[in-house]
Length: 99
Picture 1 (cartoon, rainbow, N blue to C red):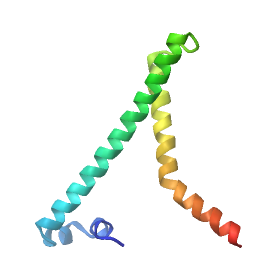
Picture 2: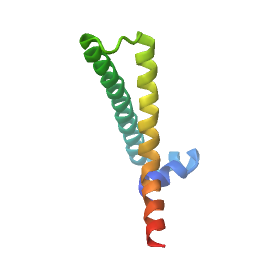
Picture 3: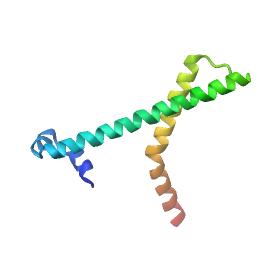
Picture 4: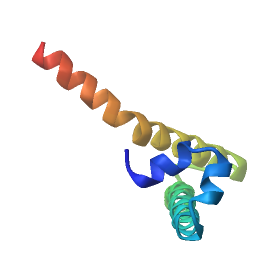
């Protein structure tokens, strides 16, 4: 277990006593993770919007704006699920192949 995981599992009173430096590192790491998540989700939505724009200009797809937003949100949730669960799925597949 790394320091960040250990800090996240400790009660708040222990975190406050652990020192300002640890708290600053924890807050910085959480902020970086949030920024990455936001950028990933914004990128996913922009990708769906770009595909819709390109296909709309070709005349193949004329989705309403709300459909583009919904598809973008669904795509973001699918990629989040894969990012979180894919390592576990790969590990299970490797165990199944060995046994």
